[in-house]
Length: 241
Image (tube, rainbow, N blue to C red; front, side, top):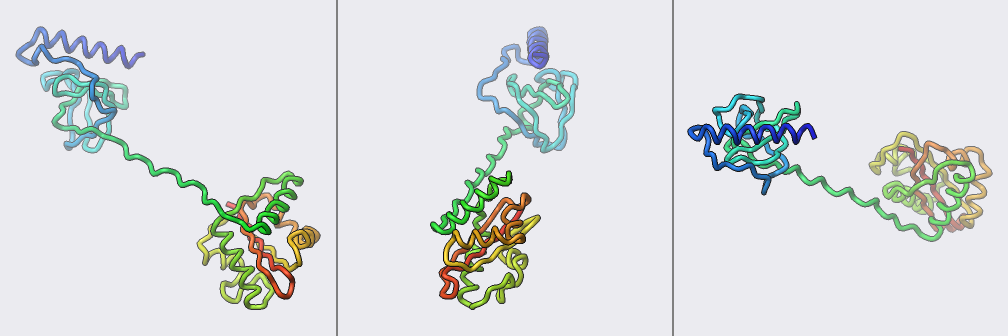
């Protein structure tokens, strides 16, 4: 309300001056809010903001090149602007240009990771355990999912069962090579004939159970690969961000 009262005073004062001083300003100048940009960018090194639409009016502010000011309306060839210090004044249309903020890039939709039936079942079992423990559910991270599947595939292909990959090193080194950032991380691996049996075995192991229920973890990747030795090979990779 104070802003509009100030604007009204400026406009009325300007019109009175224009009517009594036709030598300075054309008395037909009308205040307009039609086709007025919301903001203006200053294009000259510096410029005075005045209390009316002419260099004959007193200075009420100073603006600099590249500064963005709010625009309220137009008086002839002058723009009526509102400065950050709550000053309202006029500035020549020759030294400004309309400013339109760049449209922000749309926020990408979360990547949808397609899981196999076994991977989804294992994720459901893990999140059921976390729910019972009062811990937030894990979400699937696309890159972590890719890494976990590579890990379970490699353990079968290269006939090893270890957290240390002959190709990628430790789980943490492997995460780094896959471009995965984290503040905390862990890994479970298992070989068993089914998802349910693998899950039960992991939950019966204090160290593996701790990873499944760790509150600081919020993302997971689950690798499941058919294994001639175990039936299925599983890799669960966890991170917290």
